[in-house]
Image (cartoon, rainbow, N blue to C red):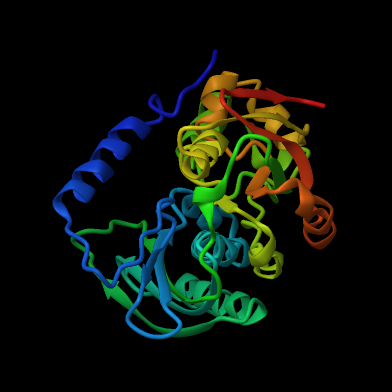
Length: 308
């Protein structure tokens, strides 16, 4: 049986339509810099400008709670925000957290301790936040959301991407923090135990600190999150396409037993957590600095292949 994200209760198209609805209602002031990828908002209210973004862990938190993997959970929350700021050319510096809980308990203390440690390790500071006890809203479960601020180092010139540019991929540490409603459904329906898998399913999202040193050598940066590798590429390629071949990864091989390839590339990172679009003249330097892999090139149409 092949599973879908929609079967698991998540409709990506519905989410896109809602985002479009919100955008249609909002009139941006002139102090918001035009940034077409939508990874963060760049505010020209000071010099240099600041970038802001927000994201959460999602339903992966349910498994972190079950297995007590608080370091991984903290990495997920930091990375989902840090990596988005990097995509617009900002250096992340400050973080705020929001915990919505039924009742404050020891697991929240363990999570926040891990969060502070992870932030310190990537040069960020927890500068504020809110923990709200709402027993009428949360019944046993809780949610964690992050808000991050960065200083703009260089506006990434995504509008200069052209046919012939190179698509470079930076490996992910796993599924990161997307598609977990579907992963959890697979585990549940197939009666699978995380402990029996030949890889660390809950490993925290990779934080791509090395990309800070690449701002002057890339045309576009895409953090692979909701909507999978396909949506990430579309966010930076606009009306163009790409011919890419994705390297084999053990956890991707596993999930492809249960979902179609088309579903997978629209849901999961497929083993690539960050994509860089690079001019050919800068390719060798980018590969050397990042440790990335050439996936393919920017083209007028689309071709995504898995396995090499």
